[in-house]
Image 1: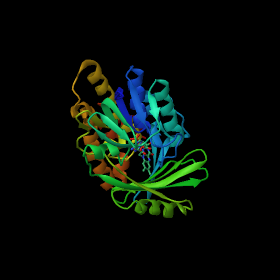
Image 2 (image 1 turned 90 degrees about the vertical axis):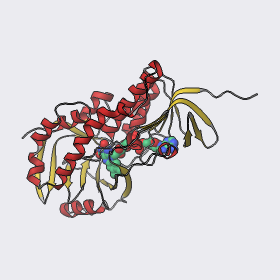
Image 3 (image 1 turned 120 degrees about the vertical axis):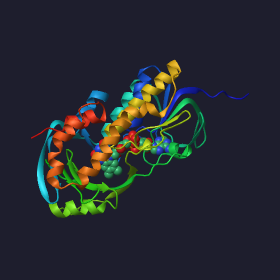
Image 4 (image 1 turned 180 degrees about the vertical axis):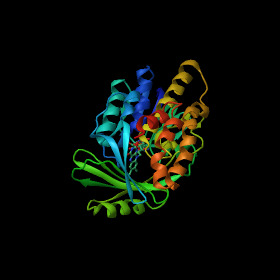
Length: 339
Ligand SMILES: Cc1cc2nc3c(=O)[nH]c(=O)nc-3n(C[C@H](O)[C@H](O)[C@H](O)COP(=O)(O)OP(=O)(O)OC[C@H]3O[C@@H](n4cnc5c(N)ncnc54)[C@H](O)[C@@H]3O)c2cc1C
């Protein structure tokens, strides 16, 4: 007798912040959700962990390390103080991601710690088993197996390098440029995330800031590549890409948690409408996000190429520019304050 395979409403591949948020939303709405994660949680994830606290408006409280109302911006060897209207916080990804996974599980999402090897139509394959779902979500990060399975490619890769330095610091430092990249020094409770990233070899920005601050990183640096947001497909038949798998990182900062979570919520609403009311699955559902990313992409070019005072004094412009819409732009608007 052939054993019948259960069909889930949704299978989500990857339990990073994006996959877990999508799972939490859909399971809370009563859908039958299965999540695959290849690593045992809590797991280390390379990340500077800087997040606007306003993310709580979308996912509720989350554990964080330190809170900052000021950013020290270094550009063209000049130092500026940016006052933030609402704070940035730093998180340790092992805690933050685990918190979101537990939230998804308590909303009744089923979690399996197994690696997905491929997806095809409604099937999801692991090393020795096959699973089925009406909708498959790829939330499996920058090097997504799901994305490769459906033959979608993006191009705007950035290179990053990060060191976790032992010690304490209280200043949230961003050193922009030269060129399209920046370096960061973002303190957590007992360690400091230090690194750089952009279009080109990431050491370029990290070494420059290290030299400026007189730091010699003794820890090992981790390199990682992922995509910034760019136009392209995120949906193929019943498969949807979100977070880093769908290239949703901010075109301005490369930060992908906030924007990835927004993509997860947009996708989750679309999936719910599709399963409950047979509404179509189509890319324009992400249009609200695209509309926010397009001006941000243009602004990024100006911010990185303009001289330091223009970058700093563009805060009021950014505020006005970003005042109209919600989501990503709400976050940008919430951060900037004229000083
Ligand atoms: C050096 C560096 C610093 C960064 N700093 C920041 C920052 O300060 N702020 C910010 O917002 N963003 C930052 N980012 C970007 C941020 O890390 C990502 O945008 C974010 O992790 C995307 O979340 P995600 O859930 O889409 O993917 P991920 O967090 O990558 O999660 C994907 C999950 O899928 C799992 N997975 C992968 N393949 C499979 C498979 N085949 N089967 C099952 N599971 C699988 C992985 O184990 C992982 O848990 C940084 C990135 C780097 C590289």
